[in-house]
Length: 315
Image (cartoon, rainbow, N blue to C red; front, side, top):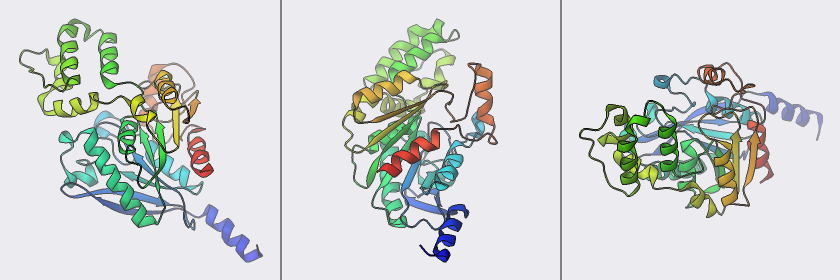
């Protein structure tokens, strides 16, 4: 390499990445997101970041829930510095994708169909041979469902992703809640009905349970409760990375290990001081952990980007 070529190569590593809007077809309007491409990185790998549950935006924030940690934006920027392009998206019904369809009617299968549209759009826009799916939290389940059809996909990256059927998780959370223990006799049969694919009559149901069993979201809940992530990952034919923080208040190490056991070819990375929004938490103090959810100024925890970038680059 001559002196001029060396200078240009060095400059490309320090130049700012290029940010651009990108669209994919949605059911009733466009799905919208942000493509972040490393400067001068021709043929960069492409990672599609799939958001978690609720009104999480493309940056990983939910203003209604007080989440402003921006983990997806920070991850995209950090991956760009390592020569990896990303697409981070607004789910259908959310912000830029508001016209793509109502959010309160979307099932896991609907979100997976959107992700397959995103994978095709990403390949068309970037020229990539295939696209990596990175699912965070509930986005991990969406990635697993979308990955059942591996066309256009390089592989799956599951970050803070649940490893058990959601019915088990909800039962555990209700039993652990002192506020909800008096209404277990209503909650448990309702969960069983949704697992069986039956809607629930909420007439006379305790008001504390209505956010979980309200009629407008019952179809979504039936969809969510119908999947076992371990069964899905067992059939994955592409490379799989599982990244789990051990300070995560929502998803535990046992979930990650259940996923890894179901697919022995998957790579499991456990990060000791990383929480659900991918920030460093040095103690077991719950308040300190939750405080990081509202702080976009905190960097990503060490190890998160490295695990993902090393896995993608190795393939």
